[in-house]
Image (cartoon, rainbow, N blue to C red; front, side, top):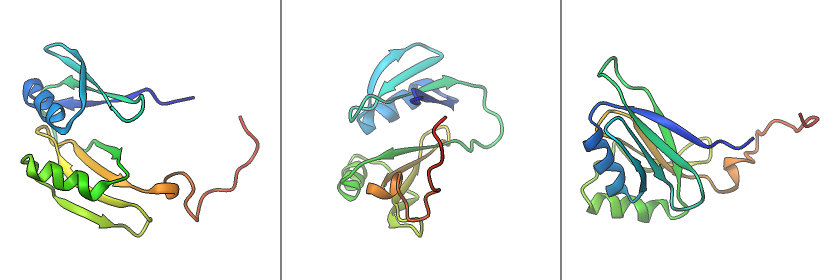
Length: 128
């Protein structure tokens, strides 16, 4: 199986669409209650679904970029505010963290080979 997309809840569609377009994602579906974006590096997509504001949003999405530090500096120059600048993590990823207008957490990261093959990876058993 291959993951197709993830959908984030958003409270103000227009602000959310503008936020992700400003980050550089390609808008491919745009309705008052739903939007979908194409990640230009690869064929992954993600979407936004208009929701009523409720409890604190705890969604997180990860976007991988090999030149993480340069990407973050570019986004800071474009006015994005980060909660965490690129930082090496104990799990061997380098991450920067920001939030979209609806409170969805965005982790921009680079993990290289450690994304799929960390030193503590589970040993492979029979395929399904």
